[in-house]
Length: 328
Image 1 (tube, one colour):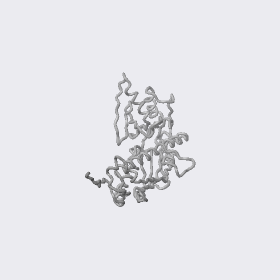
Image 2 (cartoon, rainbow, N blue to C red; image 1 turned 30 degrees about the vertical axis):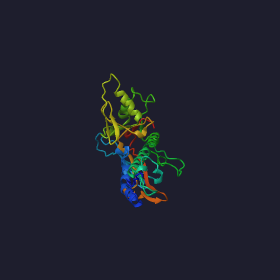
Image 3 (spheres, rainbow, N blue to C red; image 1 turned 120 degrees about the vertical axis):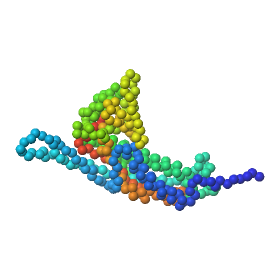
Image 4 (cartoon, one colour; image 1 turned 180 degrees about the vertical axis):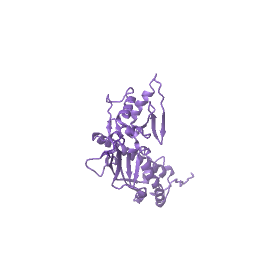
């Protein structure tokens, strides 16, 4: 008679409470990574605890020194205050898993115990890490590419709830709130990219902001690739200086003045801007709200949900503080 071996070696929790406990211990990581670990979060400033609108004050100082006279004649607008507004928008994550859907899987089925145990979630750590990665990707993409829909629908994705940085740059550029230095030929090539980026810095940015050590170029992969083509052109003596900082690639410009950061989320565009990246902001509700991520058993499965708020803004103290090439 053939010997039958029972497979009870499940690597996962086999009771609902066990898996719920696992999720609840991981939800802090989900929230923190989602709001602090996407690419732009390396330099943009995050504001915690914004539910609705919050004012972002800005200040600029005019010319202070002038020829001496006895008269006291200060300019009326030497010191001026203004503000930009950041607003968060309600979003949600909903997910349901039916463990029996994995029974026939060659990967997970062999680890399942005998019988139809609907509380066994296969490879929960792997699936949960993928959920975290996807949520971080969606937030990072919305930060740049969000475009608010004219008519809100319940089916709208996160990037349809608010305008991301590309739309903000378009609006602020049209309103004269940031300096726009167009590409003379309309598109970048290896022969014009370096000179144009140099012009953005030298002629587009005001002298009061030009020497900020935090200034950098934020560019799409195509712009960075074109710049690399220039540096690697045979016969030229340029050296490609590149490194990765917290997962974000950057290269040094040929004039050794600034870093050029490559933003994968800008793929398919020729976007390039020169600024102190700390002028870009994002806001979310408090880390203490992680209890909004939870799970409950449902017939034959497990449901998960998370409620949160998110929004972005770009603060422009004066037009010459930010320079953009006009390519959104």
